Length: 329
Image (cartoon, rainbow, N blue to C red):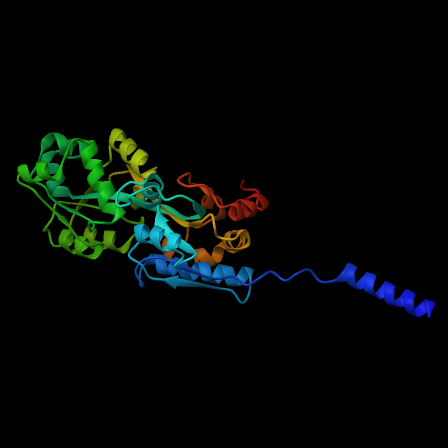
């Protein structure tokens, strides 16, 4: 009897001592992105692959959306647990700047997904040389009859580029007064307009080495216009951007390095996202960066060190734990 009782007690104690730790839970959440065929959808694929590597059986489902501004609304409503947005989108949301009617509280960053899509100001070389244009301040001074094309209205890119000219004292009405014109077109249409010689200057965010740069440069001699420091500082402050230099190797005009600004795409949530999910998603990208980098040549620069390079909104506590474990915070 005594032996049986002792054996039973010992077995219970050993069972308690050697019990397997609780299994990490699967992560099954959605991420709001943008169009179904764009880069953000590929980034969503990489995120899903990384999380599956970290926690087998997990799924991150990509949900199409109209972009970062809409994603702030979708995430705060709970339609998606995660969202992608430009730094400027989150800055406007946090400040309550239009189109937001009041500050959006509780937004939290998990990671910078990429920040290497700088703003390009691409001119036809013959036009730039005719009017002596080297940077955008020359545009403001010379007042040429420029046919200018921005990206579509409502996108952060068009807001940034229009604000850049405003920082130099140039309005869209001014351009028309000079005998020029302004239109807003998607990236593909922009490329066609420049290639066909129907515009003199376009402004857009593009990756270095983007195929559209090759398409345009094969048809038209191009010249990049630099963004003056004062105009860059103005849009950096307003949209929480970063300074950027387009390298000489990436310059389709062959004129050396060109200074501009760049945007960041941030994976975000709200403070209500549970810590384990935020931790697991962040750790998945830290532990499996190749899954993120493999989805597109545009993402080949992805590396853990760049994931923390933002100060637009606070980081989620779960993400902070992952970064501390990785020695990045």
